Image 1 (cartoon, one colour):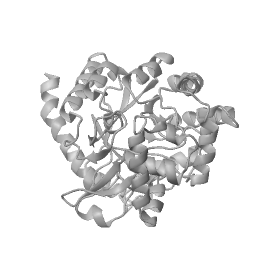
Image 2 (cartoon, helix red, strand yellow):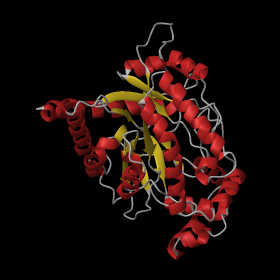
Image 3 (cartoon, one colour):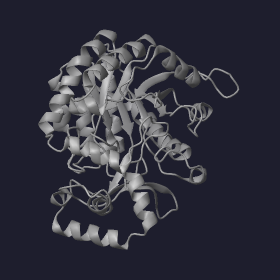
Image 4 (cartoon, helix red, strand yellow):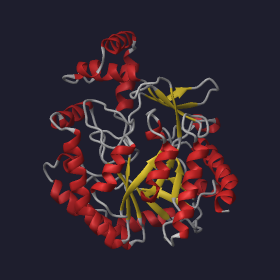
Length: 402
């Protein structure tokens, strides 16, 4: 398993020097400053590769850009409206430029409107560390009383509506503002940052869309881009919904094993694959992550290894980001399944046998607490997670190989 690290570019508070000292073998990055739907030019790709390949003192880092996360899919493509056809053409051109630069793994997602969604970005744990958290009552308070989405009341039962109303009534004004900011939080350096009005406008355009329609749009997109990816030797991998349950009345089509089976069967190509995110999928109690790795492993091109602790038992539940070995997913069993898949690939002569993974998210601990890094992406918290995962791999690797 190839150890990688997500790096958001020169503005990232975690430097390439830091990642090198963490012992990683490759970098996961993206051109966050390029507007969604625009072409990634060879010049911008090469610039990012130089940034990854150079330490602060100018010495070579020895690291390469192993995985693109993400080459974003525009809302126009998801809705098949506006400039969606030109955006697909631009996407194909970007794939050609990435392949020309020697990058083979392309992660993307098909979540409408918002990327991952949390109500708290720095929730305090009993030991003083902080983490990201999703509280369904607070989210319902946002949806019903801050966003005031039409029809939102239909998505919550009486008890949850009452709890949300009470929470909102007792919420200080600064907390209301912070909650809204948390829910629509974007990546650092992203070309687009949504306001509440932006979110309302996008939601209105999705109002009549069903899961079947959104899935059709995904498969239409893949039918256009996967032949190019296959020709170029690229491996595309779709990230799951986060959280993996309906939000804001939007359809969710990447939340379960069944959803992923429809993805890979719908456009049957080795270039059409999966980003198996144990944190996103693990927030749903009916997802068996080691089992998914066993059954879908031949199409898993990228792994996000993180853990969450579910605080309630429903499909749409409260949860928080746990330590990598401390949540509800059996991380040892999942890593073992990944190592077994690698062994199968190696025996079959596949050149992509060494699956890249990264320690996804992490709790803010020690010096992280004063650095104000990207939520979910602290240096020490992720380093701790990587060390724990590295220990599992070191312990299981020889046994699996035997």
